[in-house]
Length: 189
View 1 (cartoon, rainbow, N blue to C red):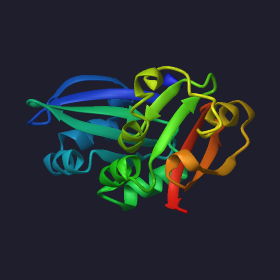
View 2: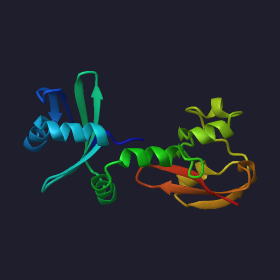
View 3: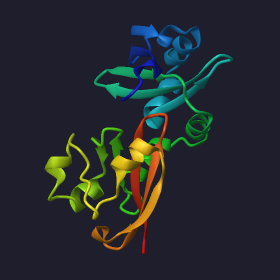
View 4: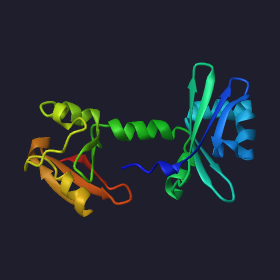
């Protein structure tokens, strides 16, 4: 499933920027100096996703506030596309949230064993009759549902009209690096 090697470090500070804990990339002199800067921390809390580049790394810091502490989870192996997007768009978090919850771009993600990894709120409502089975369970293989299990295993995308989805075009796309497949219903037919 998920490669935890991409978690490069962790840093925790108080409101004054004093380091309470750091590990891995959280010990980088660049990150240590950034988190001590109040304006950087304020921007990081607002944006939630902070890209940081060095000559050797492209990190993405997921920055959250927990009571009086600021916690940064540092992710490495960030693709150029993700890095540039989060660097250029200060509301990237909101866009990601919209993409995951928008009824016209709703997603369902299954792993290579056809277990449901993510079911969008829109699909939860639509698949209410089988939602309990889907929660951590296997994706159904009936002809009325997109064949995400097959897409995850073969890596070959499928596009079809799903009558059970109220005549929507459904695309199923493999994500080879993760061994997962995603289905979305981007447009009404």
